[in-house]
Image (cartoon, rainbow, N blue to C red; front, side):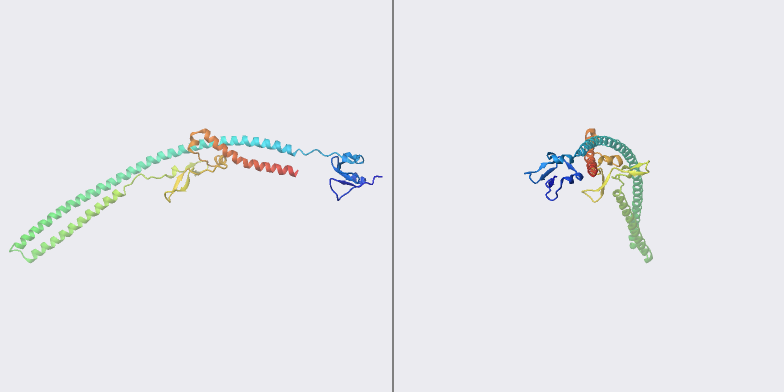
Length: 308
């Protein structure tokens, strides 16, 4: 009867008898040692253990599945990135040109309206200016007339003073008339000065063509959604505290094709002029952005296979 004590796979703590292998999974390449052996040997080399040796299951093909899945994912990633870059880039260019055409139409219309408004204001100012000048001319005529009356009154006053027939009442009346004429003269001089000042104010406040972008040159009405949309960004200018309207920095690099599909992705001057630059830039953004999705899918596949 075999009373050997067997140790398996360098485990010096647990030991087994021959009958223990009836309920033990033993593989051909498991290492066995028992007293009398100088070193560990494979189970398949021990004759009495051969009846208990089981066939080891084949190695899992998870790695092969992962490799195939990776190749498929990379192919889909590249193809999808190319398609979305092309569709989003050139679709955005069409939308961009359509938007600019609407803006150009609105700009031309605003130029005509501003020109009409400017001309109307200029005509209105000119009428006011002519009216004021006419009033000043009339006041000057009145002033000349009063000046003549003052001189005539002074002449009569001097004659009355030298006459032996004049009395105190007559001289007093001349004096009063002279003072009244002087007051009237000063009054009309003040009126002339006020009207001259009004003319100066009109000259200073002359209406010019306003240098700003009207609302309909910033926004385009979307009849489908019933609202306005724009491609401009408001930002603080370097030279003033006023907000300026610009295309600059309106679109980020990341997920740019998706912005183009669902929102707005402004085009640079180079992209507007060159289809190659347009597709190249959108492709770079598409590859970089979709790479994030690809990595996430790899991680998901890996953990799923590992769990199985």
